[in-house]
Length: 110
Length: 122
Image (tube, rainbow over all chains, first blue to last red; front, side, top):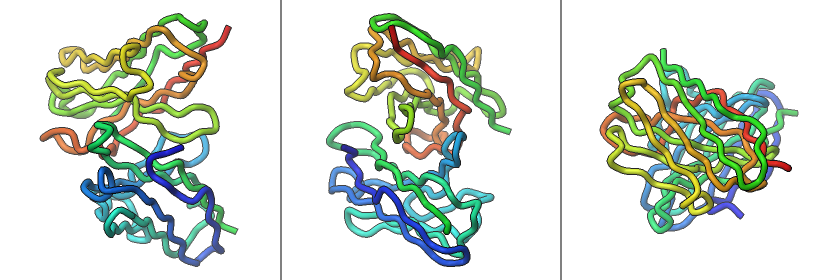
């Protein structure tokens, strides 16, 4: 069981918007920044969002992040088939003194 | 550009040892915290350990504490993970990753290596 809870899968049609939730607690998301990673099949994870809502250079503005209380959300607009991947949220857990990840969400673009 | 290249993975018997290496280039290695993250086959990401820029601080996941040791050699731009008393559940792809900020540990990882597979099996 992961410390952070994500839906196992989400799906949407090309061009549509999807959101992926990440639920935690006051010891992790509630008091720390959240990052989001995209993992395409057979490749290493790629940072999409840092500091809960900032995009590294080169990440299109179709990707956005937000945080409220003990939950965070990744939004993807204008879905493309190339967005099919696993998405993970991550943060620091102050009680565990460990970096923690969500279990991952598989995005299918129908 | 930032490059991280892991090596040292392979097949090892339960109870055995293995040492992973990560060669870094394209940035001032001695300025950044570094981490190891692993991913079991078909599973999600699991943080394993981090080490501070000067090796003063290390931290480990409970699942590896007492068995794994992270270290670095800033003169060689290299990160290491010594893995002892290996178990079947340690089977995973092991990634090294660099922290985002040079000022400390942010647990946000913009740079990852390609990973090296460790298989623990008799």
